[in-house]
Amino acid sequence: MTAPLTARALGRALLARQHLLERSTLDAAAMVRHLVGLQAQAAPEPPYLGLLGRIEDFRPEQLTGLLERREAVRIALQRGTIHLVTAEDCLTLRPLLQPLLDRQLRTTYAARLPDLDLTDRAGDLAALGARARPLVEAEPRTFQQLGPLLAPAYPASEPAALAQAARCALPLVQVPPRGLWGRGGPAAHTTAEHWLGRPLEAAPDLDGLVLRYLAAFGPATAADVQKWSGLTRLGPVLTRLGDRLVKLRDEYGRTLYDLPDAPRPEESVPAPVRLLAPFDNLLLSHADRTRVLPEEYRSRVMTVNGIVLGTLLVDGLVAGSWKTEEGVLTVRPFAPLPRAARQDAEAEGARVLAFAGHDTGRVVLSAEAHG
Image (cartoon, rainbow, N blue to C red; front, side, top):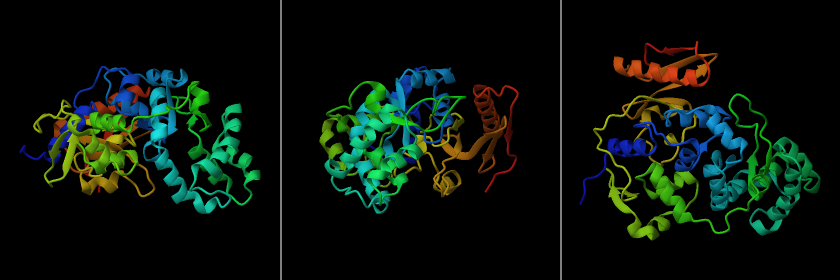
C-alpha cells in the first residue's frame, strides 16, 4: 500500500494544478476553463487578480475581451455563487447545478414566497420562469427591476424573493459592463440562451464535471467535491468512475480520488510566495482546507459576513492577508516572515499594483504579525 499523502503533499498537488507553483502561458480562456471558473461575486477585481497570479503575462483586456465577445459570462453556479466561466461551461454547468439552486431557493426563500409551491419545478416555478423570460430577454434587468415586474402576479410574495426565484427558474447571466475591468455597472440579467444564442446542454455529463474538478483541485475526497460544487451524493459518481481514477489516502485514513496522470509533486518542491485574489476558489473548494489554509487562520481570512480576503501564500500556506486602497497595497502577515519571503511579498505586491495601473503606488508590509 502506498504511503499516505501528508497535508503538505496535498498542498503541493493542489498548487501545481492551480498553476501557483509556476505561472502558466495558457491564455485566459484556457485557464478559466481549466479552473472550472473563478468565483466572481465581488465585481470586477477577483477573477482578474486570480488569473494574474496564475498567468505569466496576463493583462486585463484579455478577460474583458472574453466577456465583451460573449465567450465568457458571469452566472450563479458552484455553491450558488457568481462564477465567471466560459460560455461552453455556462451551458453545461448550469443544468448540472440546478438541484443545488432548487435546494437553496427552498431553504432560503420559501417563507417569503407563499404564492409558489417550490417542490415541483414543472409547476409554479416553471410558470414564474415563463413570466420572467420575456422580461429579461426584452432588456437586461437588475433584480431590483425584475422583482416588482413579477410582483403583480404574486401579491403575497416579496419582490426580492421573486427575483431570486427567477434566477433559479432561468439561467440568468450578468451582462457587461458588469465585471469589466475599469468600468463596471449594475448586475443586470438576461438568459444564457438569449445572450449566447445557444441552448443549455440537454444531457450534461456529471462524471465529466467530477473529473474536471480533480484535474484542477485533486486529490480529493467525495466531501471535497461536494463542498466545491454544492451538490450532494457524489460518492456514487466517484465509485462509478472506477478504474478511470486512482485511490489514495491521507494521514487520517480518508480515501482520496485522483486522476492517474495528474501532477503530485514531492512535498519538498519549493512553493513561491503568491498573493491570492479575494474569494479565490483555492480556499473554498475542499471540505478540509488545511492543505493550504491553517485552521488557526481561517477566521482571519473568512469573515462572518461571507467575505474572503486576499491572502498571502508563503511556502504553500496562507500566511497573511492583503488589500489595496488608493494605490497602496498593504500586506498583513499573521506571523513574522523571513527576509526573503518579505522581499518576495513586496515584489508580488508591486506586480499587482502595476497590473492595476498604479505604477507610482507602494507596497506596505507590516513589520509585526497581526492577530
